[in-house]
Length: 287
Image 1 (cartoon, rainbow, N blue to C red):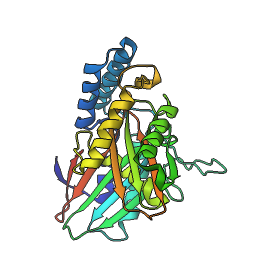
Image 2 (image 1 turned 60 degrees about the vertical axis):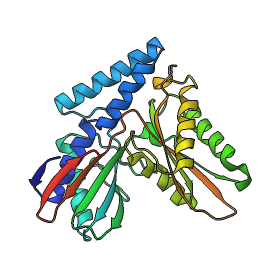
Image 3 (image 1 turned 45 degrees about the horizontal axis):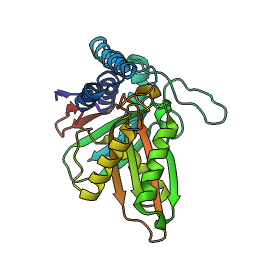
Image 4 (image 1 turned 120 degrees about the horizontal axis):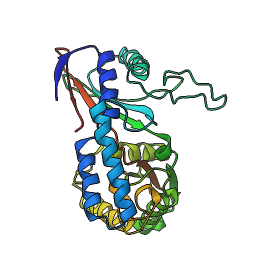
């Protein structure tokens, strides 16, 4: 981590630069591990190309993927209403300075403002706490993976077997479109909107995160094994490494309901965090 005095706006520019040009260390190790067990020659070469791309992006300070996604922010700690303006200004500057591809358009007219802003963009989730700092995490979401998102409202009688069937079919039906090997975020429970939100939040966990809930951890491990034995492989071209990790997040739900959502991250499982201290210094990381 580094500590430097700067404004929130400057921090957002640096945060987006870090997220788009440097892959989190845990994701890098997950790709290395996938390459170590990969037996398919084409798949192995695909993983090699991915890792070479990652190294060049970091060395050159350029985005690792042409689809720099839409930035999804998670803000926690102490902050006031002015932080949204700072985040929006930071996104506007980052789009031109890094640069980032201008991806946001009006859903009907497809008009593009050219700065990754617009009604509802960027997405910002707020969680106030008693901490004496402000923490901002960004999760850039590209369309290839985001478009594969699915939600189902299962019958409670479908049980765990129904949950597994839905998750497996969602990942396999997505094929190569989300650029596997993917990180699979799963939300189970809550309400429909809460369930989709949890699936995306699950992607914030490092790939080496160990779930402390025994039932969830066992399900994550079972799905990881099944999906990697599917033969889908990197970029959907066949192989032993279809997913880098499965992360599950749950919440209690109505007795007559069983929502399940899946949200995928491509191999470029980008994320970065800045912690802005009360003295104005900023500490960056990808924890």
